[in-house]
Image 1 (cartoon, rainbow, N blue to C red):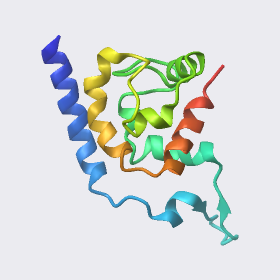
Image 2 (image 1 turned 90 degrees about the horizontal axis):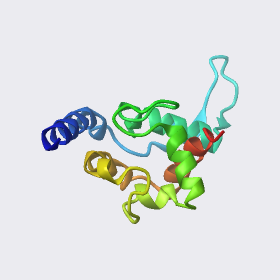
Image 3 (image 1 turned 135 degrees about the vertical axis):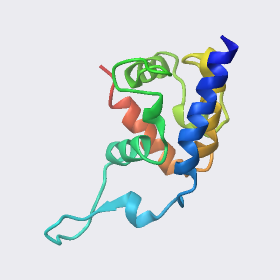
Length: 136
């Protein structure tokens, strides 16, 4: 079991390495979008921004899928447990709260926490909004 956790951690770390080399926080890329027709930029919703971060530089989709467990729990399961336990996803992603969904998998999550700890509160709240958008 320890070998499996170690292997998973190494794989997550390897997948994060490329992402972590990209610069964080180009605000024009993370807060606005433009259309191909050259219309004025419009602000993204927190859910849209959260999805973009979750699937992009957050590298969360390498372990979490919307409705199925992969390495980590599904987004739906995370949202449900945080709602039921009145947890704060942003605080956890900032590294200031204990894991409540699947503490046994916390060692694997450590690699991505290095990425999320560097994110702004607004970016973390956007990820939280995206996760909560999967509540049923």
